Picture 1 (cartoon, one colour):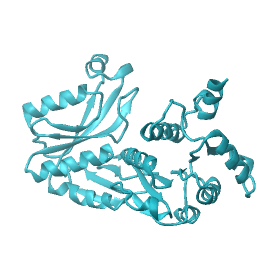
Picture 2 (cartoon, one colour):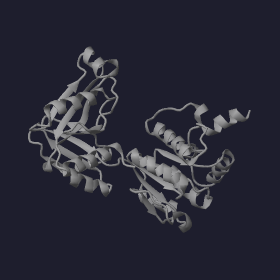
Picture 3 (tube, one colour):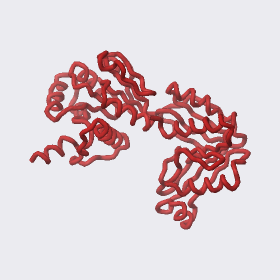
Picture 4 (cartoon, one colour):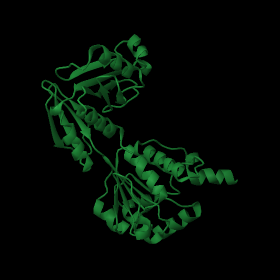
Length: 330
């Protein structure tokens, strides 16, 4: 499952290859409340078809109508602002008088979309610099902390995964987790030294490695944009990897298991050289309580919790699996 950004770029390439006129629309600035974040993209074809989103739908409708009436005849990139007045904000569905500024870029061979896609297929993080006066594009290496930047001369957008997720254990649950995480723009790695689990496990875009998990955790040099999920239920595989992950700057470390198994795991981890603060970083039983039963529902529960932690959103204790089940059992 591709991320929205990747789906938009692939669609641009497909339409261009088919000889159609295409424009790439990018959110470059917002004021007040806005439905889509800076960097969100939309591809629009000369016949009005769109992929992606820059708003809740009203701005898309206006862009489609504009293309159908006028075509895509821009000589160079254009900046367009919606929602300056209260009436416009209401018309375009921008809440609380929000305002959104877009860059509309007519695409051609000089847009370098195929080359960008090729680099993204190698999991590179790429800065795409668009010269506003000529439409010429240059592709440069980017860092995870880089953000979209607009100057008088150029628009630089960032493409590729900025976050990493290591999943320990190749199984059915990890398939759902990996697929959804890919759509969330994570670079996903699955590690499992057990051949019987690893054989036949495949999700397009995910690297599957035969390695001891703790060795891989050290090799990956986890940073503050990294997350680790241990799913094997096997202490020989999970515990050492969790120990190394908890000592790293990873923003999220979680392990699946029952409340009883989680308590036993914490007791085992206390025997390692972990501080109380490091041990407290472990999410387990992993996920938010939503009554999940199936692997797909459990994956949603886990990624919801992971996303809240990534976005620095505090979660009520009642949403933790341990707390919720304790209340239900009483």
